[in-house]
Image (tube, rainbow, N blue to C red; front, side, top):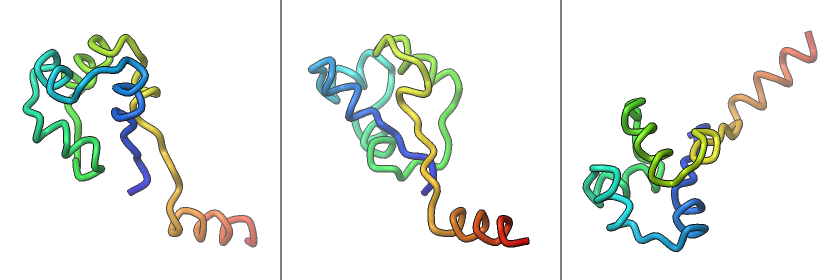
Amino acid sequence: MPIVVRIDVELARRKMSVGEFADRVGLTPANVAVLKNGRAKAVRFSTLEAMCRVLDCQPGDLLEWVPDDRDATQALRGAQQ
């Protein structure tokens, strides 16, 4: 998946447990795990806002776009045309 969720990095920086984070954001630990493991298909802006508030960070600190093989192939084709 081209969007990578970096919650684990931000939690480690703050020495915050998943349970504490989940409680403060208003999510279940299971839903935090879904986000951390890249299985989420969507995130509500209100949830993203709560995560940023709790972690005192920007959305870009939590989400990263990483091109996958398909994106690299399309970019190569576009450069050849």
